[in-house]
Image (cartoon, rainbow, N blue to C red; front, side):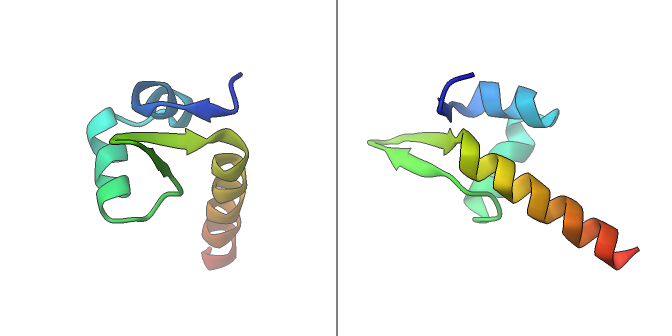
Length: 61
């Protein structure tokens, strides 16, 4: 898998809709980078973010 993913690839990777992903970006709840006007997602940072989210959910149950 590439080091960076675009919106459609990231939405598929996270198993969420593109609309939901764009909402997360707009609300700055997910790590992303602007490349010009494009939004891209560094895969390693995204994986770390997912681990943090999983720990937060596990810790709150």
